[in-house]
Each structure stands twice: as C-alpha cells, then as structure tokens.
Length: 212
Image 1 (cartoon, helix red, strand yellow):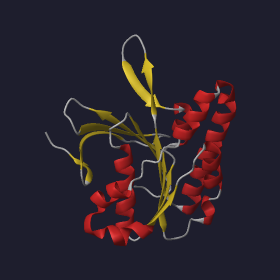
Image 2 (cartoon, rainbow, N blue to C red):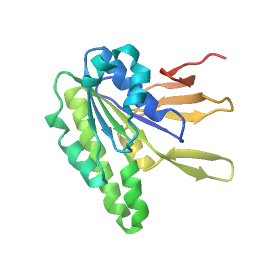
Image 3 (cartoon, helix red, strand yellow):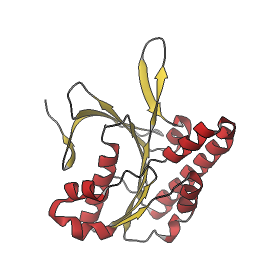
Image 4 (tube, rainbow, N blue to C red):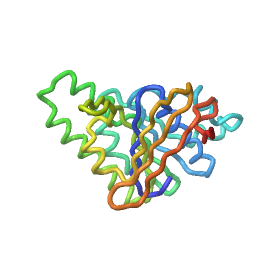
C-alpha cells in the first residue's frame, strides 16, 4: 500500500472486504509497523486474524491497535483524536466500515441526511490530512448500495460522492460465478493513471491471486 494515500475498498457481503483489511494489518505488522484499526462493524475477529497470521499471531497481535466505536458520534471522536495514536511506528490506518454506523443513523432518520453527510465528509477530510501529513497509508472500507438503470444493475459505495472525492485509489470487489473467487477492479482517481482487473481467491490465509 502507498503511504499517504487513501484507498477505498467496497463490495457486497462475502467479497472479502474485512479479510483484506485484516490481511493488510498483518502484513504491516510483519514489516515492523503498527496499525490503527477502527472496527465500526464489529467484524474484526481474533480467530480470523489467527488464521491469516498463522504461527506469528502472538508476535503480530500487539502491533494492531483495535478500536470499536458503538455509534457514529464515537467514530467521529476516535477519528478526531487519531493524532494521539500516530507515531513513526504506525504504518496503516483502517476504518471498517466507515459507512456502517453512518448508514444506521441515516435509516433511522432521513431528516439527518445533510448533517450526517457533512460529518462523514469531515471525517474523510481529517483522515486525508493525517494520511498526507503523517505519510500513513489509509484503508477505508465501505458498504454498498444498489444502482439500477435501464441498461444494468450494479453497486456503488454508500455515500459514493463523499468517499470518491477523497479516495486516491478505488478497489471494487465483486463476486463471480465461481465460489470463493472475486473480481477486483482497481482504478486511480485525481489524474493518476491506474486501471487494473485481477481475480482473487478468498481462502483461510486471506486473499491471493487466482489464475484460471
């Protein structure tokens, strides 16, 4: 992952979003860096990390600073105070998912949409500032929503305009007809030339390249 960049990952359920996030944190720990992992969806399970990290679990686990906000307000509080946890030893920030608690409050009261969107944008702006000033890679995971038109049916990240504005790289994870095989569509924003399509296999040890 590129330091200083915001990487947006989104996809339907069972496409390996959290597995990818945990795998990135494990790889970061293997390189001697800490990860600040904000688990807003309560999907970070030590057992899954143990599968991915293998025999190194006890060594790597202390390298991950895990936070579990219970509501969108607490998520804001944690993000606002990330500077307190960022040091030269922190190489990665993960928010999984940044739209879970936001979406829960949005469903409860559509009248709050403007306020919630403004706050989500502020959170993303703060994360982008930290990423670029502190040179820390930042992985943002998002839930998705269905988009239906006359010609096709697809999915986009929740609050796509807000998240897309701040993202440097976007990775869409999509299921295929083959069980356990997903398609990752990678593209860069803001004038960067990058467009790539790869197949990945979701296994016990994480996501890995899949060749037909």
